[in-house]
Image (cartoon, rainbow, N blue to C red):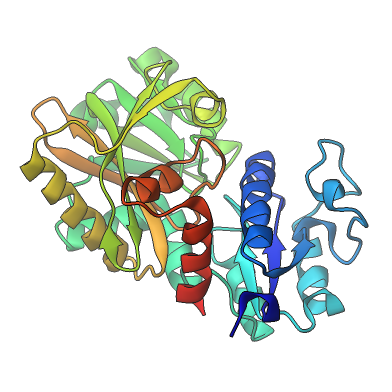
Length: 332
């Protein structure tokens, strides 16, 4: 089947805190789909049935109409998806990567890109993913989890006894370092937990691994070259992720070959442990003694101009357009 005979619904925006990042990813994906000759239909599920008339309406800073996660049901149930061959998920974060949009699309019997409902849900639940990492012997930092009914004195005691300072405090089900804080001592813990609770009902307090920031993408059950990130802020935070020039990227990473080989193997094990498919990105910290720690699995990694999966694909001579084409073909 030629590309021009395939109708692709590109899902853009969404209702998560990563809405603007999704728009950036989706613009790049949209351009690639057009270059590849696909018949593309833009849909922002957060708008429901009330969609913009113009292409730029989907990418504008000013909202076209009120956005809501409740609108997803109306959008997927509507005739917007009539005749669609596959939905390309340009969404990020909550309501995009957590299995909810995947479940709605499956109820409509519409194919979509990336991992299925269960693996998307598990990957978004950071604690559940880490439990599976442990089960499949994928090295991951030590952690504890709490909900809003926490006692600060008890929590600090647990951190000191089980994890130590510094530690990482982050929401259990957010991406792009949204709501994440590195706590150097007990004085900042309560504020950090309160911040994370704004984004999730459960918070992870994780062992901080001093070292380097690395990541490995998987495409078609093969691990791509390891990429190292050198963020300007020391922490690969939201600004460093999505602002041009705020981070340096080295691919292949300048690490011993045996370490790189082990990391690619760990990435593939983590990917399969969660039941993921088609493509994804596994984030790591590499300790000062060259021991890798898997932090999480991203089932819908970024596709912006600064994104990591396209950089790793390029290192093995897969262009951005070819990467998008592969994702569609594999998902079909």
